[in-house]
Image 1 (cartoon, rainbow, N blue to C red):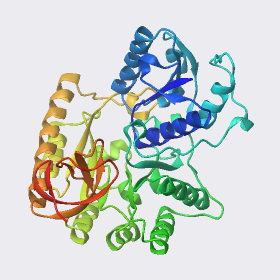
Image 2: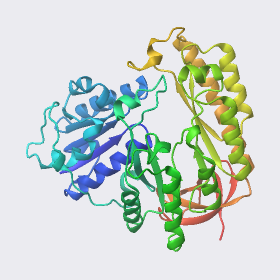
Image 3: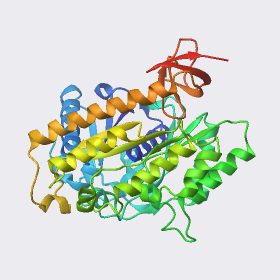
Amino acid sequence: MKYSVITFGCRVNQADSLGFEQDLRGEGAVASAPEEADLVVVNTCSVTATADQGARQTIRRIARSNPSARIVVTGCYATRRPEELAALPNVHCVVTNDDKARLVPVIVRRQNGELSTSERFGEGDGSCGAIVEPGVAGRTAYTLRVQTGCDEQCSYCIIPTTRGLPRSSAPAVVLAEIERALRAGFKEIAITGVHLGSYGRDLTPRSSLASLLQMMAHLESESPRRGEVFRISSLEPMDCSPTIIDLVARHGVFAPHFHLPLQHASDAMLARMSRGYTVADYDALVAGIRDRMPHASIGTDVIVGFPGETDEDFSRLCSYLGASPLTHVHVFPYSDRPGTAATAMQDKVPPPVIRARAARVREVGRRLVTSFWQRQIGAEYRALTLDDGRSAVTGNYLKVRIPPGHARNEWITVRIDAEGEATLTA
């Protein structure tokens, strides 16, 4: 059987899709383009209306170009609105997030491959897939989900509904998966979760993300020959503790790269978003990281056009970002998500204003990126080659073009010459 996996959204979805790849290969399936596949798995996101639209458009396009394909849809949109997706052409099955782990074994083993959208998967249907190697689905790093679910109540977010309560993988399971990935040849492992900072709180005995990271640092001290790097995915500001910052600063096994969603630089907006911290709290956090690690990459997410956002609120956001030590900004124009508290809020910002504000913040973000690159010129870093070996990424998330001559997934040393450009050194 030929298969294709299409992924929308966050690194958690990327990790889930990597699991699909492993399960499919373990069943003897062969990867192919969507236009030629017998089975197409579409792993959806639903963080914005745009994400929903993108999934629908992709499914329709696959149905037109490959009418014989069996399309299986999963992910957050599939969990939130399964009936909408089930009505699209060639969709043979809609699988909620709760059933993701059993998706591939069940579908592959059903001879006719057709499941009703209401059918539930049995607990005994799971299997352990074959670990993939670097380069599968274009991935050089291995994305490892250690946690899923969230019980925070951010007023704009539908994810607690689509992902459920927090559930963590036991430390022994995480460490075993890391060992599998390293044996398969991966040199960088991205640690991710829906609410990564809550890792371990649901376990018995209780654990924590800091404790897990300490175990990972200990792995490297036991086997320094491998030279692997762990990259920590998005962390909520209140979860990025001094212990975690210290671990990243002291251990070369961790990439000096933080992603800390700010969401807004107006305390009034943060309160309406139910974020649980102030701008001053956030500013102190990123300033502390910058003091410890001047070369670190510190990215963020912001929402523009949230209900009630005034011109003054927006001006504060732009002013803060422009003067901050942040290095890159992901901009999310506000989008109503039915079922969230924000949907019922008054003083909605008109869509044209939201679009204009998003464009302005993106311009601020481009200036932050350029400023960070300029500060790195002349610095030398270890980098991991990507794709066809003509590009590489450093620990502090600088993606650079390099001369040919290297394969994917090799450690090299580069000197930063300009934005996007580097020279190979020793």
